[in-house]
Amino acid sequence: MPLEIEAKMKVNDLDAVRGRLNAVGAVRVGRFLEDNTFFDTDDRSLLAADKGLRLRINRDLENQTEQFILTFKGPRLHGSLKTRQEQELIVTQADSAAEFLSQLGYAPVLRFEKKRERWNVDNCHVELDELPFLGCYVEIEGPSEQAVLEVRSRLQLVDHPLVRASYIGLLMSHLQEHNLPQREIVFPHVDPPV
Image (tube, rainbow, N blue to C red; front, side):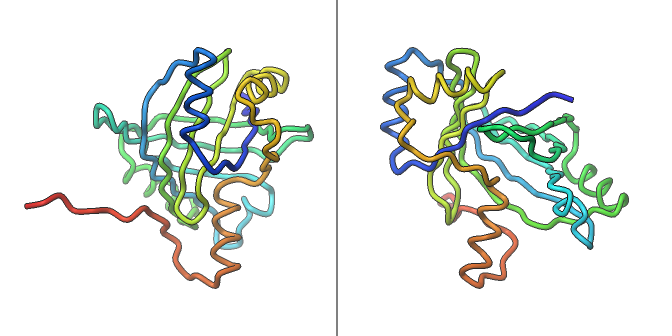
């Protein structure tokens, strides 16, 4: 099973990171709106085992296409960066995939949107992320810890502490700390004029 090796840092200004990406010759891949739904059993067996099961609708904001991705994340492995096994499967219909998971005993736990801008540099993916309630983050994912840490250094992000928690973990903590009951976290949507 492939490994996901990543560094995640909270930042105040994505424009500053964009400027550094341009300065180091990174290539911008695109802008996306992700709609992520995490599933678990009623007794939260996946959470207890530090595993994750996600259905993502990935909307390309430039060409308006959608991709549906079912992802299994294994437990975190030991290391200085967030490393875990990850297996992804492209599905043709999000609703059918959600029903399939339901039939296997998995129910939606939390749904959240994320705005993502993807860049490539030095064999690494750099994601500029924005989430409701949480703000802005940079994720660097690559083939090794060394590659990820080198890109982090080139982007002058070494002074930003590493965030080891997942977005779902951060959001669930935020909801609990603020006593918020909702389980769907989305950006405010403005209907187009008629």
